[in-house]
Each structure stands twice: as C-alpha cells, then as structure tokens.
Image 1 (spheres, one colour):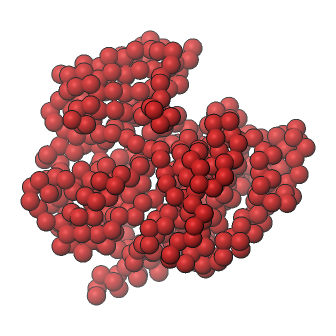
Image 2 (image 1 turned 30 degrees about the vertical axis):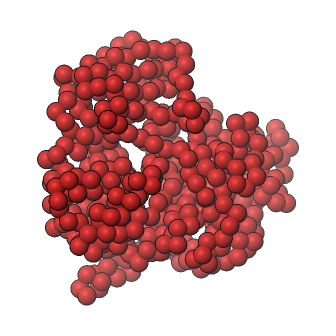
Image 3 (image 1 turned 60 degrees about the vertical axis):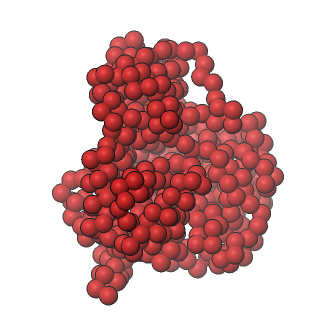
Amino acid sequence: MLRKVYSKLVSGVIFPIQEKLKGHSTVLVREGLERSQWWATEALYDLQLERLRELLNYANSHVPYYRCLFKNLSFDCNIKSLGDLVKLPLLTKADIRLNLDAFKAEGADTLSRFNTGGSSGEPLVFFIGNERVSHDVAAKWRATRWWGVDIGDPEIVVWGSPIELGSQDFVRAIRDKLFRTTLLPAFEMSEAKLDGFIVRIRHFKPSMLFGYPSALAHIAKHACSKGVAMDDLGIKVAFVTSERLYDKQRENIERVFGCKVANGYGGRDAGFIAHECPEGGMHITAEDIIVEIVDQAGNVLPMGQAGEIVITHLATKDFPFIRYRTGDVAVLDEKNCKCGRGLPLIKEIQGRSTDFVIAADGTVMHGLSLIYVIRDVKGVENFKITQESIELTRVELMVSDEFSEKSINTICEGIGQRLGEEARVDVKVVANIAAEKSGKFRYVISRVAQG
C-alpha cells in the first residue's frame, strides 16, 4: 500500500515538477496522447497531416537546410495529403553530417547535443530541443502506463550506454533514489557480476525491468542455471529495446521472471517509434511520428511488404527529421489491435541484432562495448567485428582518406583492454564488407557466444 502511495507522489508531483523546471511540457503531452490513442485511425491521420503542415512551414521559415531544399524543389508546404511527402527526398545520416548547422532552426535556444549509440556502425551527432524531448518522454510514459506501472514504481535498468553510465553523479544518484531506479551495467556479465545482479534484483523487488533483451535473457538464463527463483518478486513487466527481440528471449524472460515482455522500438535519432501493448500490438506513436516503408530505391511500399523504416518526427521543429532513413527493416500491419486503440501497428521488425562477446577471463560483455571503441575513430566509414575465438578477434574496416594508420593501434588496444591481454586483435582495412543474407549488416558477431 505504501509503495502505491509513493508511486503516485512521484508520478503526480515530483516528476511533473522536474519536467516543468526543465522547461518540458511532458505532462500535458502525455495527457493528450492518452486521449488521442483511442481515436479512429482516420482521425489520427488528420492530426498527422495538420501537424506535418505546421512542421514543413516552420522548417521553410526557420531552418536553412529546408528553406534551400524547398526552394530548389518548388515544394508547397501546404500539402494535400500525407502521400505528398514522397515529393521530398529521403534524409540520410550523411546529409545531417554534411549540413549539421543548417539543420538547426534559427533562434532555437534549447538545443542539446546527442549522438547515436553506433550499433548501426554509423554514429551520428544531432540536436534535440525541448519540444522533442517532451514528446518522446511522454510517449514512453504513456506506453509504460499501458502495463499497469508508472514512473516511481521500483525499476531495474540493465543498460550499457556511456551517456547513462557516465552520468551517475551526485544529482543523478539522488534522482534515481527518488524515482526508485537502479541501474545495472550491461557491458560486463561475468559469473560474479551476474550473481550480484540476481542478488540486487531479488533485494530490490522491482515492479518492472528495462533493458536490452539479450541482457535480460542472459540474467534469466544465469538465474535458472543457479536454481534461483525470480518469479516471486512481483515483477509486472520487462520492457526491452535497442535490439531485435527473439522469441526464445521473450520465452526465457517471461518464464524466469514471471512477467510479460513489452517490446519497444525507437532510437535517440528517430524518437520513440512504437511500443507493444498487453494485447500484443506494436503501436506506432502516430501522433508524433509518420512511418513509411521503402524499398532500396526509396520507393514507398504497400502495407504488408518488408522494407526500410523512414520516419518523419512531427515534434522536431528545432532540428527537423523529415523522411529520415533509420536503416532498420520492418513490415506494417493493416489490422487493428484487439486493445481498441486506433494507433497503427508494426507487424514485424526485422533489423537490429547485437551479440555478446566473451573476454579471456570468461566475462560476458555486450557487443556495444567493442563498438564504442571504433565508432568515434576518425575516418572509419564502416566496420565489422568478428570474435573467432577467445584468442582471436578480427576487425574489418572500410575507411576514408581521413583514417590514420595509428588508429589501428588505438583499436587493438581498446578491444584488447576489454577482451584481455591473451586475445589477439587482427585489424584489416578492406574495400567492402558484405551484408548478411537478409541484407542487414551485423556489426558484432561472436562465434564463441554462439557456441
């Protein structure tokens, strides 16, 4: 009973105060989203069209990149339908890199610098304003509440981003304590670490888990192997994101922790795109995000066909993302969800898979721990890391003229520090890196972990 009272205090008072102090309109946005989620799909499309016109007109008036683009195309921002978006070119990471300052709206004074995690092999620097932050947080908050949990309920977060892990200062520690959030680092998963994770989860008795599906599945597997029960803690849901969720992972997490798994899809650049409801529908945040599915040539595909996800984020006036290529592959669903929400559905997400790697001492680490070694090396255009064995890891690099041979030593040392001195790192510069049969790249492959 006391837990519920405290959660209401956090979600109804403490968190709203925090957001107001930050200049965010998160509470009002979430309240609006909780109303509009029940609208008919046609009404949501009308809302998208209205907001899209506002975004396009604002970009034309205030954003140098789009002012120039629209002028060159003789593009009319007062479009008649969402289908008129095809008159605009697709936006790539390269476009943003080459025109970073031109994407910033004139007079925008709340921009914060962000970058992608680099699991796609293409880390990107970009900026986000308060409007975008408010809408993304509100969308996540709404989806969290679908599952009967709320901000302030005890939460275990298993994560590996250096942004989150590097922000554990005094203020963040107080915030996490107030919000009852405990962060466990996903990079290192030795047996001793896993034992410690299990003890902390059992002691904390969280209402929800949040993290990479591979990391939560790994903890679940370890608990099972040790004969430690985890299904008696009152955990209601495990939210997973940032990787493709496989059926076996879902089954293991649900069985061991005694809760349902809720899949989420999005990114720092693309925003909070979709989230699974208790009825199993993967709902698109349609009030904020327009999703198109395109083929390799950029042509929009009909419903039900697999292609690359392209998003237009309607809350990005300060730094617009219009027809942005995510690099992920998905299929849209024309059916409605049994839950009754009018939000359109993603039927299947086919991209995003990051392996674990295993160090010489047996420590299991998230593959992103190696990606972070390479992602910021100047001149690296693409890469693939293959852990052939405990003793050998191969790195293939596609590089530009900016790449320095000295960086090879940097990469070898960085990966060696993570995998151990016994591990040899073989770095090779190549002209091309082949994709998987599916057409998607896998940037980290561990043949040791697969075995």
